[in-house]
Image 1: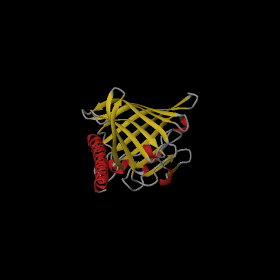
Image 2: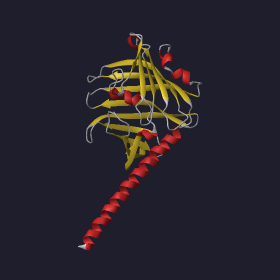
Image 3: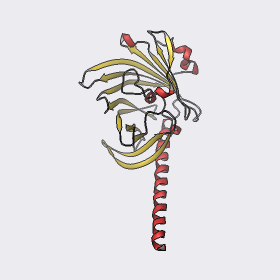
Image 4: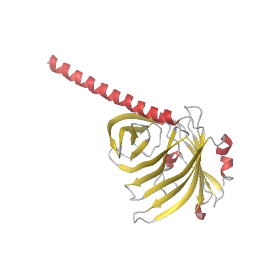
Length: 261
């Protein structure tokens, strides 16, 4: 009886130790990915958003994204997305202040109405301007916003990857977990599976065509979000990036949204 009980205790302890090891490994992988991306200061990029419906018909939009890195790791980055084309959406702008556990602040400027609309924290899972990206996907993905667990190592395309489970620590997320593939060489995210339930896969983001800037920062030039619920997809094709462009806090103020061109 005592031998059986002892074996059970050892099995439980071994399982607990393995689980703790998986948590520590997952945190270490995500932390290294975050470390490699820090220090860029600010950036600007231009891109094309391609919306594809179930039938394969597409619509294109041209936009710009500016980002200001937070100097304090306990805070999140600031960003603004501005649409330039087509005419019916030109001037639409989304300003985001990412936080850690507090709700992100987001404001949407609608030029047709000439007003700024605050995005409620409970609506962050809603579609961003008709795309398969949610408002939640557009704001910063700071390290401390998630808990982590390493799941396995496996090939991903022609690379070897760590597969890590991320669970949002903040309230009102539209996701229960994000299963993320990081390549073992540069710790770049290659793929993210988004789950709304433990087994309900909502959509998959695939990142490719990475290029290195400033001899350090890797950026993907192709992102594709496939929705299993709607059968639609949204492709982001990045054309160029610029770093250290002189952006300041003033460029990310609410008052500046209406003046963004």
